[in-house]
Length: 418
Image 1 (spheres, helix red, strand yellow):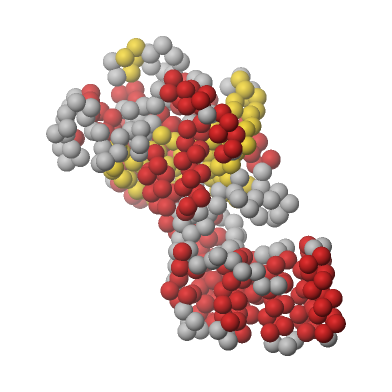
Image 2: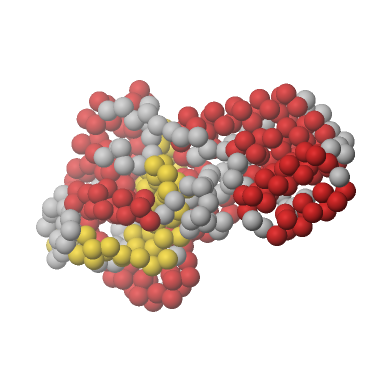
C-alpha cells in the first residue's frame, strides 16, 4: 500500500563552574527525565556511582536491525538538551541520527575534566581536586561505552562533545586517546589550563601521530578580553595579559593543528564574535556537527530531483553514496532512508517512469530487507503493471516479515483478483 509521507527530497539536502552546573541540573530534574532516559552505573574506576542520560532517536526500536552512531556529551545535564534540539532539526540530511549520551558532571567536575594537578589556576587558589581526566577517560572507555554498547543498538562510530573544561577534556582525549572517538567537538576549550600544558603535548603528538579518519572542531567566543573591548581577533595575540590567555591558547592550538596537516586530521576552527562563553554552545554544536559530518550530506540532489535523469545515472549515484558512507563509517549503511527511496519510487511511478520507479523500490529492498513496507511498495509497482502474480509474491513477503493483518487483507484481495 502506498504510504504518503511528508518527504521533500530537496531538504535532504569562561569555564563553567561546578555550582552553576549543580544549580541547573538540580532545578530541572523532571525536564531532563523527559529529554532522556535516566541511567547510572557503579564505576569501579572512579569508585562512585555515575549518572547519565540517554536520548534515543525518534524511530529507535530495539527489535529492528538498525544501529546508530553515538554522541557522548560532557556536562550532559546542561548540554544534552542543546544537542538534542540540533539533532531534531538537522539529522538525516546534515548528519546521521545518533544515540545521545549526556554524562553528568555535577559532582567533581573540575577533578574529572582537568588534565593535571594544580593548586592554583589564573591566580586563584583551588579548593577542589584536579587532574583526574585520565581516570575519567578510563571510566568512559572501559565502563560507560561498553555499558551503552551492551544495552542499546549502537555502532562503533562515536562523537565526543565538550564545552570549557569539557572542551579541554575533549582535546586531551583526541591527543592521547584518539581511538575512542571519530569526531571531537571542543567548544570554547579551556586550553589555558596549567600554563597551556596540553599545547606543549600537542606539538609533539600532532606532529608524529596519524589521525586519518578523525575530525576536530574548535570554537572561540567573542569576549577576548574581559575588561578591554579594544582587543579584537586581529590584535589579541599581541596582548600578553592574563585576561587574553584563554583566547590566545585557543588560537595557538589551532595554529599548531594547521601546521601539521600531514597527520590527516580533519580540522575546522570558528570564531563567534557575537557570542560569549555562556552562549557559544548552541551555534558551535550546529556548526561543529555539520562540519565533522560534511561527507554525510547528500550529493547530486538536483539530479535525483530531476525526472530527466536516466535510471542508470540515478543507480550510480545511489551506489556511490553507499560506498562513500561505508568508507567513512567503517561499516555498510543504507545510502538513503527507506522512506526516501520509497517516495522516489512512487513519484516516478506517477510520472509514468515505471522502470526508474522499479529501480528505487529494488534499492529499498536491497538496503532494508527486513522492512515490510518496501516489499509492499514493490507490490504496488507490479500491480500498476498488471502483474498480479508478482504483486501477490511481494505482499506475501511483507506479511511473513511483519505478520500485520493489513498485508493479510491485501493479499486476500489480490488473490481474489488473480
